[in-house]
Image 1 (tube, rainbow, N blue to C red):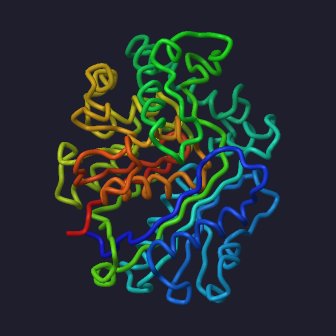
Image 2: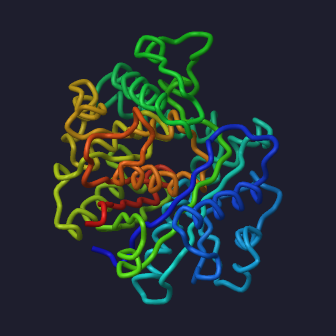
Length: 390
């Protein structure tokens, strides 16, 4: 087990917020997370900010915006962390490392992104920066186009998986109805997600609109402490294990249908924790596109290669299945403000493990929660395993 515990958190709704700024979102969750933990700003030893940006915000160099939350944060060591769509988890893991190294006892971690103010034409260009531009820079459809190619290749190798993708989309949208932080709280059902329509057109390759996560604004924050300090707090979720595996950026240098970095990260985290995948109560995984969740079933070891569809078709990953996946609704329903996503996944998991998830979203007596957050097409791969403090 790592030496770190999560003792407080905050989460804005995800959506489109014209009245908010990156600064206002950061300030809001920073103050709320500290209040939730019952920790004074003056007691914070270090701050990590997860913020991707890549052109979404005119204000860059954003680390010090966290200090706007409270004058007592002035002069605290503060670092902005970035690793594409895994930026939030990168910030959380850096905070955990600071505690493990003995450099800090209390770390405030904030994740934020404001994407919706960016013109539509620019959004795709910004997101495509998380791919290898010499190979993928001209991809039609931006990052959706990259995953459209992946889906097409998967279909060619393993057969048409349109039913499985629609079932994943329907599952996550149904789960998102019970999540008050989710951007889209609507149960679309399998038929709507499966059929091409004016409201659900093809976006890239075999991917339809319901296969793609949402462009979002939002923020999340959490407070980390060392294990001894956590014992004195009102609530605590222990970090049982973490792992980070970085893969090649060019997809041409790897088998993109394998998500090998995801597999390595899961294997490392499970080995460190002394657990097997079957020991986990639930998983929050990175469903930026439904085909990503499908391949992640295989990469985490839930099914053999090419058989990910079994997990959704046989109900394994439903909320009442043997391994519920994305009970929060995932990125698909919750939204995907890039820098906030990984922090959000840790907050949602901590809420579940303390019995504080919203009604309808709360699982029955969860004991171990797994998190997989990735940047790019399985390039930056982060796994965390959390458990309630005993």
